[in-house]
Figure 1: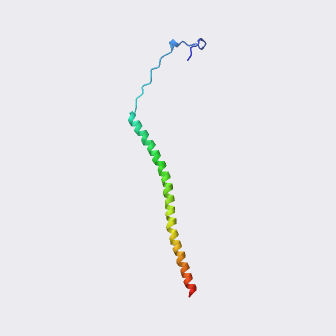
Figure 2 (figure 1 turned 120 degrees about the vertical axis):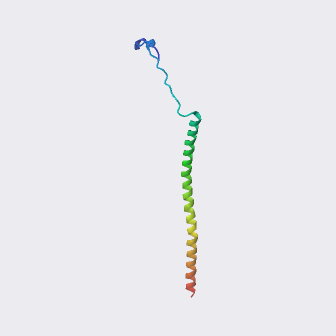
Figure 3 (figure 1 turned 45 degrees about the vertical axis):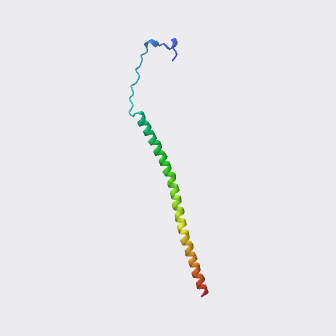
Length: 88
């Protein structure tokens, strides 16, 4: 602050406030460890979200490919039966 006579204060009358005393709850390495755990947990969460999408897509593709051959075999067997019935 700049001293000004118009403001009507005397800087010598100001009281000096003592600095607040702080104490640290955790040490440096504990804070770093907790920060890394928080970042790692967040990264793991987002990885699981993306992996779950991929797993769902893979499961869907697997069920579709498993059903397709059975369906094709059924149609082929039906066509053979119809073809054999038409010859008789």
